[in-house]
Amino acid sequence: MRVLLHGSELSAATAAAALAWVGHQVEWLPHESAPWPQLLKADWLRSEPELMTHIEQALASGTLRIIEAPSQAHSPDVVWLALSPDQRQAAKALLEAPIFDQHSGAVLINNSTFPVGETEQLHALMGPQHSSVALPDTLEEGRAWVSFTRPSRWLLGCDDATGEQVARELLRAFNRRNDVFQRMPCRAAELTKLAINGMLATRISYMNEIAGLADTLGVDVEHVRQGMGADTRIGYEYLYPGCGFGGPNFSRDLMRLADVQSASGRNSALLEQVMDINEQKKETLFRKLWTFFEGDLAGKTIAIWGAAFKPGTTRIDHAPVLTLLAALWAQGVKVNLHDPAATPALLDAVGDRNDLTTFTNDPYLACEGADALMLVTEWKSYWNPDWHRLASLLSAKLVLDGRNIYDPAFVASCGLRYRGIGRRADPTTY
Image (cartoon, rainbow, N blue to C red; front, side, top):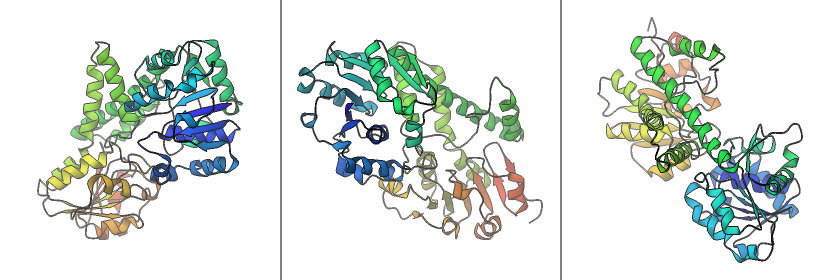
């Protein structure tokens, strides 16, 4: 099929590479905010496993072509939109282009997270001679290629048989083992995507609230987590307390769901609480540090491991580290930060500062001369550190684990003080 794809999001790059990989003729029109020369330099694109390799192969084979304007495109069978929520005008501008007046039968596939009902409105711009499908973006950053080419599910929102038939044919190569499509009306698919992330965020925030209560009561939240997860009505997924979630998609999907609620006249106290709890939890490690040093933080040096909002990405969008850094700097704390991939994005966000030193190779360099260590992003390289080396480097011998990846008792047995989210341990001897 001939596919005209518009967008500069991760979902756009992944769809362009994957659809071209299986033989479709893809013409990719990046959004003007991130044209192709800029995308080529993007850390997040080059760090995504397998993705850039497949893009380069598709460009070399000719199944993928980069264009700069709709007028350069051939008449498409499919128009694939993969835009950010604030780029709705770009979608409208594309669909009002003269190219759609010249033929009929194109199918719009809306892979963007727009307001519920937006796919129908975009379809109206194209005219009744075309069809439309809502195919909400469900990619996981850090494994986008696998998410697209080996999907566990696709939410397929369509209100006519033609749109469904074309969407299924377009994605047939990724749907051979079993039928992963969950077909439903268009608006239902758009709302389902937002509702899923709302539920996941609610579970995380609830678990964080329980962790705070466990701290107050002197209970190890890990026992509580295991007890809850063993209940088959609850399960273990997204039941891990931490120092807050972030990311470009998860956070804005919550905002989008809240907007949908507000626009419908149904303000959601629950969603507001979920978002408020998450913002508060981003300060959790700072509050534990404040308590440990009894508010005397001026002049301290703190090592931070991890800046990215999750392992496997270079992004720091809405990441807990941003809130944490602001709180530390306000108290006159110097920060030594290590992250294997996200330091360029962090420096772009905060600029050069005398109270920030960044490292990308040896994480122990960030701990030299530091009073304490904060674990913010659970990169695999952080999971099994040399505890005795850390004990010799950290003057206060304090480890603040924002992801609960360490065993408190073992850390304490190495002579360190451990503070996690709802967990703690101190060495019995020094």
